[in-house]
Image (cartoon, rainbow, N blue to C red):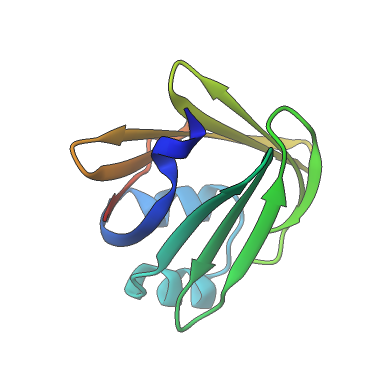
Length: 129
């Protein structure tokens, strides 16, 4: 089912993203840049390894992981987090933990779009093929 996510995605719009970034401690300057960029995300699968590359003019990141196994991740805003990604009912569910905080994203597909939704902040980003 992960194969359904394999594609090149382009950010089209976002909702509550600045509030989400504030809530996790992202600084003003970084938030301003992040709010104005429209990154591309490329999702690839090779065997049981998933690779997610996010590319923009501000900063590019790449993570590779296996479903259900915890891994170390450095986020685009330079947080060092422990992450685990699972597949639940056709949705990719990444969970990041750092400094006693936790954020969960639910990535779901719909009609040519990839819609990650953060919990509990209710931030959503809409990506199109």
